[in-house]
Length: 225
Ligand code: C5P
Image 1 (cartoon, rainbow, N blue to C red):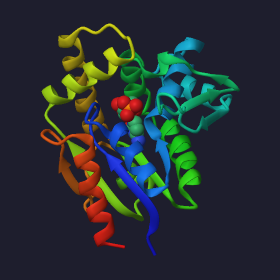
Image 2 (cartoon, helix red, strand yellow):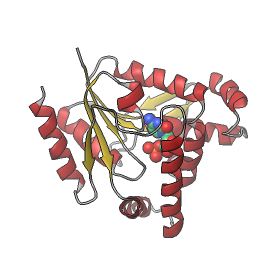
Image 3 (tube, rainbow, N blue to C red):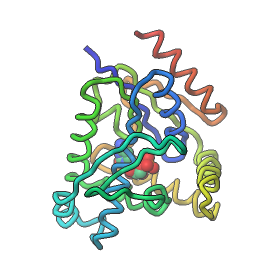
């Protein structure tokens, strides 16, 4: 029997968060932002002065971290993360933290710990999980899997809009370069690389708004319940 979980994977800036939140609220499911967990670990490393490339010190630090996910904020819809009881602020969402998260997420101990946490959260079902490996590694038994894609230019344009809406100053060229770099790292890493699960429905969102993508997903879900 399949797990009542929807997985939404794809590269950065493709609109996964918006779509996942909308879909979760349409289905009455819990929204699971797995990227926020990798970002939180990256920030914890930065604050502790631990190099995100260095497996052993990262693993040691990880053992001292109590990581908690709070439900999305009513106002901005962002998931909150607590590390050892302290709520991480806006820095969690910065492009720099995203780059650090991408580096630290390549380490085995980090992936093992966060994957287990995510599986625990999804065990009862009724979850919409978004990330890079939620359909391939975290929830291979998920009933519905989607892979969202769009051109790097379109994704950079959206990410810039999101950051500006949060009041963050952005350098457009830098954002595009970061997107291309982070995707390459995520796709090429040996453990849990970014790729569609064999049974995922691939949706190109380049010319669709979030509402249209959600409708497309709901149609697939309804067809296969
Ligand atoms: O989705 P978000 O931009 O918040 O993710 C930050 C980084 O965390 C990604 O670039 C990716 O390297 C990593 N990540 C991951 N597996 C996931 C979710 C995020 O490796 N399931």
